[in-house]
Image 1 (tube, rainbow, N blue to C red):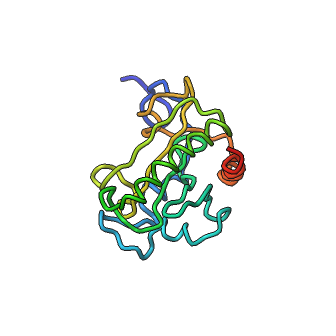
Image 2: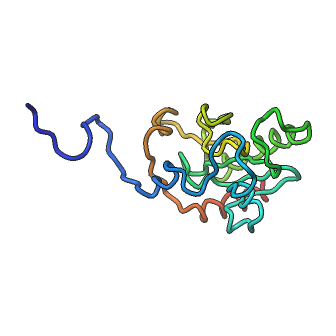
Image 3: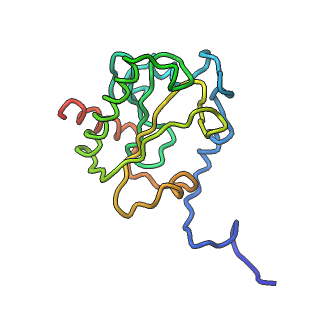
Length: 179
């Protein structure tokens, strides 16, 4: 029998151990279920905070743009309605329009500020579809660069991030004002 060293089976990937993500994986501090109550909703709480404290890049009339606390790539943001709704079909016409406009603007900002080459944009609707916080709709905007990896390794494995979230927020917020 072949003797193997270290945890897991060798597969050609180098590992960066990030035990701090276990809190997210285990659901610490996040509501569960598709119709999670507004009480304790992290997005509702973030919206009440100051921009720097909540890592908010920009605020619109019905939506805000916030850095993902557990990003797949540097600059990974979410467009989130202020209103606590679980499903895209719950948005009114004004909210749908602003979500689209903020998504366009954040793409421009990410290209300008950090040189993004492309994007993965989307939302997981419902807990069974992979929504980490299913009770409060949010759309992910993940910047991408040529050669960074394909989408599945980003979701399934850990990436190194070259910048603190607070520094990324400052950089994107400043670019938001310039662009």
